Length: 226
Image 1 (tube, rainbow, N blue to C red):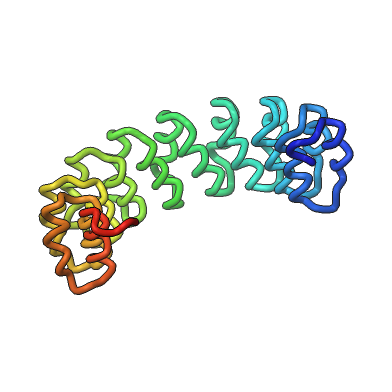
Image 2: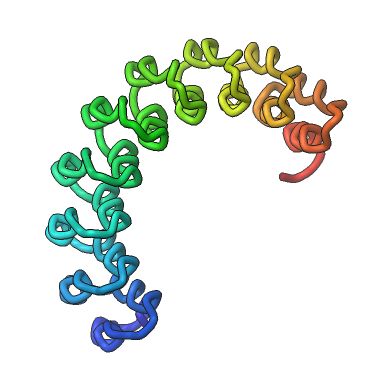
């Protein structure tokens, strides 16, 4: 009823015991519904208001006690609202700013203490920001550089000490780098080469000692469905 019913139907459900029902009421409701549910005691419901409500609702919720609500404001809010959340106490909120904000915001977050924030800077920022993160001490962040960077970034990371980073390089599918990585000591890296490398490299890996690698090679060659 919350989804397919009328606004009157949704209003009848606004105090329903189930938070999932109230979430749907907020999701499909009108501004009047959002005005009521913005004060709901369950953060999940308020998150729906932050996501589906108006700019004015998000302005009010930018200082909400629940970090999940503030995360939704950072995701769906305006540039100004993200600016106001860039120094939020919770890394999940700052990660959302890094993902959905602009490069000026990411520049201010490039030295954030949490890897999840720096990872989003690497993934969604520009090459200049990735240049600053290519030697980050966290492998998760360096994998973000490899996944979104240019070939030069991947060339610099192909011999990284972490298999997570080398796997990310393999997933980019640069044939010369995959050629080097097809004999990598990590099963996960070779599986990535099998799936994202050339068909010749996939043929080579059909004989790998691990079934997971052989399976990816067969998928790449169309021998089995993924």
